[in-house]
Amino acid sequence: MLRKPFIAGNWKMNMTAESGAKLIEELKPLVKDANCDVALCVPAILIPAMVKAAAGSNIKIGAENVHWAASGAFTGEISAEMLKEYGVEYVIIGHSERRQYFGETDETVNKRLTAALAAGLKPIVCVGETLSERESGETEKVLYRQLAEGLKGVEDIKKIVIAYEPVWAIGTGKTATDEQAQETIAYIRKTLGELFCPKCAEKVIIQYGGSMNAGNCKGLMAQPDIDGGLIGGASLKLDFAKIVNFDK
Ligand code: PGA
Image (cartoon, rainbow, N blue to C red; front, side, top):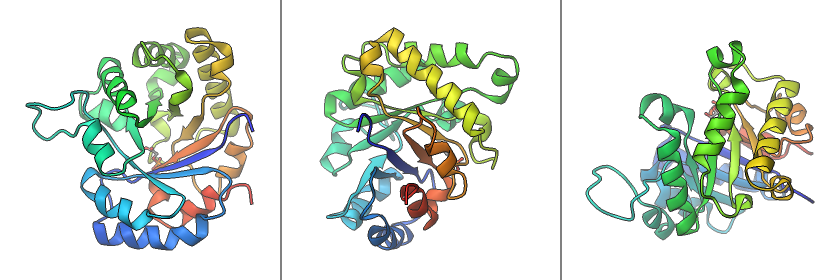
């Protein structure tokens, strides 16, 4: 298999230690025979409890953000080493909500990415255009900038997962059509080929994210360049298992 599919959840600021552990316990038997990699990215404070809940299963735990410094005077922030210490494997970087509400830029994405890779975390770097950018025909320009700036200096592009999340599709119930998602993700892969090397780009896992659910996952996953999903709302319930088992 050139690229193993990868389905990841993004709990955002949802769940408690109790409800999260309960959901993981229920998901475990439902996803144990998955043919894809499976992860749940959870709020930082829930990480120890969710790592414990997922122990011994094929569900890996991820974080939703990471700071770029190793340590220091950064009140409220969490370093890559701290995440590693608690058994975190993946980390989401540059989610559109962080870009929109918390001042994330391509430059800070790049700094976080560098720190995550140095610590041995597997980054899921989010890119995507807003509705007005799509409507004004700027999708490719925006994605090119996010990739060129955000991934600057990366030595081994295969170590990074890209999540293409059109901002207008996140939490809105409006999914990109299979064709729109495929076309844009193919553009992302082509761009990675230009920025890095075409052969390496063929090996990069690129997820789709934005209102992906049990009903539309099959069609999206059938597209040649779509290797997985980053799932928000539908990762808060057992539907997540249906997405993980998209091929069954
Ligand atoms: P959604 O969120 O599935 O709820 O649209 C996706 C995401 O923001 O990663």
